[in-house]
Length: 142
Length: 154
Image (cartoon, rainbow over all chains, first blue to last red; front, side, top):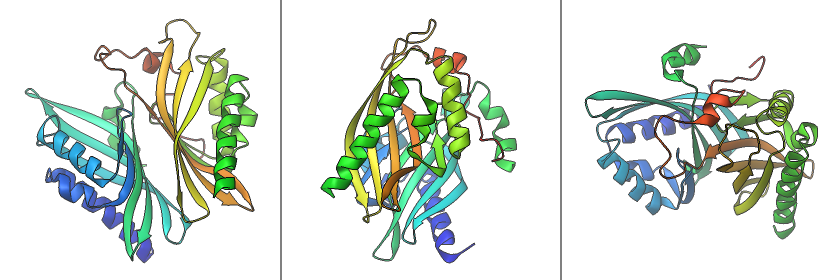
């Protein structure tokens, strides 16, 4: 793994940690000021402050106490300072007394700005196959 | 930049036209050889061959006779050889048993390669209609390519 790939893995790990701490400020802090985000329901956040507000809201409500895990599936450098990072997301959250699971594929376009990798765009898509969660472990192992 | 923006809008228009003709070969010609495609159910295809085959399948089945409208919402450049094109799609479906209208946000990441813009990554996300009955999704039930789909050899 090159040092730039390692830096991108760290960025993903920081995103995961911020989610698991329910920290909307830290989560949004990994994005560029003018970043765009398309969330799992197809809605659009434009700019870091909208991303911060949106995540504060979900961390305080439906995803309160949730736990996320991101695995890096692929990194593709388009230029030395611009990279596509394909992720696989596994989310567990409480709904009443039940634990719900959700699998998705967030993709990040990251750019190295002032020597620091930032997310300039993120788009998430839910993996919709019925029963997909049961097989997610096996697929991630492949 | 103005010319680049025009070229990218032209690609979006041509994608729309290819879809409406059910022409998977033309659809795929705007993609780079090793492009990645995350489709609306979260499956990930890699490469022109897999992208063409996947679209041929849906053009022949659930989206046969469908009409696609793609509107560019925003274009942003990262450096001068990478662009992100955010679009909003409206798909009118004629096959029975499916919702007649689907809205989504397909995003294209394009790269200028040898003077020509090519799609290097494409990701689609369904815009969830408000008030859709929970746990009921005819698109998921009837779609020939499920969310776990992987490109052959990937």
